[in-house]
Length: 75
Figure (cartoon, rainbow, N blue to C red):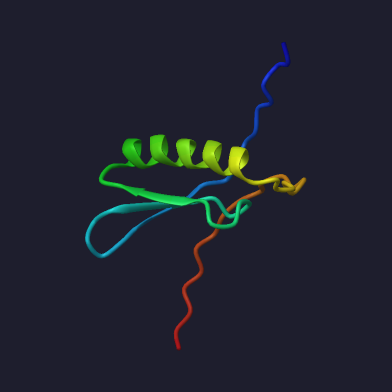
């Protein structure tokens, strides 16, 4: 029996104008979902990641997450 691999992904969570939370995985193109609460969207993004990993033969980047910064720009 082969042991399952464990992956760690950065998940970006934003809130849209209707109040829904939208989660995206930058390392997996097209991997996103939404939910009414943070716990719900986290559960759903885990499911989405599993589906994306099973459905596609994707090459995962070998990068380490360092940080995230919000930058405000006036235009």
